[in-house]
Image (spheres, chains in turn brown, orange):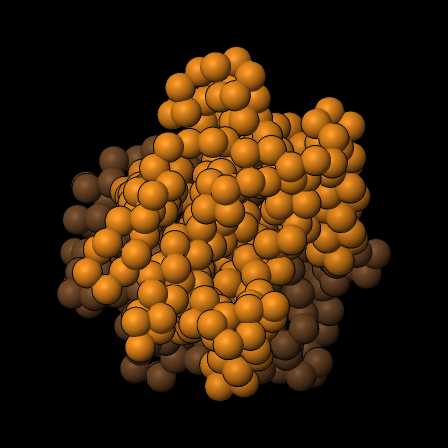
Length: 235
Length: 290
C-alpha cells in the first residue's frame, strides 16, 4: 500500500504500554487527524511511528518499505518529518539556523527551502536572526513546521500543533496544514480540538485507551457523533 | 592604585587561560550532558605531550604544540569512545557518567606519574622579562597567552556559527531530541566535540604551564575547580558564557588575591555563589526554553 501505513502498533515507555493496537494511514496530498481524549495515546502513537520508542511492536511502512525499528534520523532521511508538541525548536539557535537544521537530514538545498518556508510564514523572515527561544507561541509553531518542511519530506507527523494557541491562530495553523498537503505531502496530525480536525482533515482517526475506535472520512463524521464516542455513549 | 591596575593585568592573563579551558569544558558538558572531571588531567597530559615534543624531541614550540593538539584530540575521542560510550549506550544517568570520568581522571593521572614522575618540569621559553605597557607590567609570554586565547575564542566562534558541524554541535547541546528528530546523528557531533575539547584543554593547559613557568602532574587538577566555577558562572553549555565567566573570575581572583593571596582560587567560588544567588541561570541569560 502506498503512503505511510502503520498497523497494529503497540508502544509505551519502559515496560508500560500506552497503546496496544493502533493502525492508521495517510497518503500523499491527504491529512489524517488523530483525535481522542487526553491520555488516549495519540502522541505515543506518533512517536512510535517515528522510531522514538524502542519497545514498539507492529509494522510501519513507507510506500511499502518497512521503517519500523529504524533510528529517527534514518526515518527523517527517508522523507518523514516529525514536529513534536513541546521542545520543537532550538531555543538558542536563530530562526534561520533552526531552518538550516531542518534541511540537514536530506541535505536539501537550504536557500530554496527557506524561500518556500518564508513564503508560507512571512513572520519568520522578519525574525530570521532572532533566537527561536524569543519567539511567541504562534511564531514558534510556525518555525517548528518550517523546520519540518525544510527536509522536503513526503510525510509530516505533527503532534498537537494548535496546543496553547488562540482560536484564530489555531485555525490559521489548520489552513496552513491544508496548504502544505496541497503541495503533495501527507500529514498525520494529532489534534485535541475535534472541531478543527473535522473541518480541516480528510480523514479522522479516533484513538481511545490505546486502541483504534474509528477511522473514517471526516465528511462522514459529526461533532456530535465524535462527542458520543468520547463519552462512551456509542460502542 | 598601581598594584590594583597591575592585578587587573594579571587577571586578564588568568582570564585568558580560564577562557581556553572553560570553553572546552562547557562545550563538551553541553553536548554530552555530563560533567568531565578528567578535564584537568587531559590538560596536564596535553602539557606533557607538548613538553616531550619540545624539550625532548627538540621541535619548535609551535610545532610541538600543534602535534600535541592533534594527539590530544585523538586521545580524548578515543577515551570517550572506549570508556564513556558503553556507559552512555547503557543509559547510565549523568551522575554515573560523572563518576566514570573520576575514574578516567585517576587513570590519566597515574599514567602521567608513571611516565614522567612527580617532579616539576618547565618549558624554559624566552620572553619572561616584563614589559612596561602603560599601567600594566606583562611579559611577552603573557601577552602571547592573551593573544592566543582571543584568537582561539574567535576561531571557536566562527566554528560554532559558520560551519555545519558547529551549528550541529549547538543544536545537539540545545535540544538533543529535536536534533535526532531532525536527522542529525549525535555520534559524529559528539566525536567532534571531544576532539575540540582535547584541543582546548591542551591550549589551556599549556597556557597555564607557561604562565606559571613550571608544571607538575597536578597542574590541571588543581585548576579544575576554578574552571568549573567559570563554566557554571557562564551557564553550562554556553561557550560565550564561559568566556565572560573567565573574565569575571580571572580579574576578581587576581584583584582579591592582592589582599589574601593564599585564598586566590577560593575567591572564584565566592563569586560563583554571589552570582548564582542573583542569576541562577548564570551570567548569560538563555534565549528561553524550547
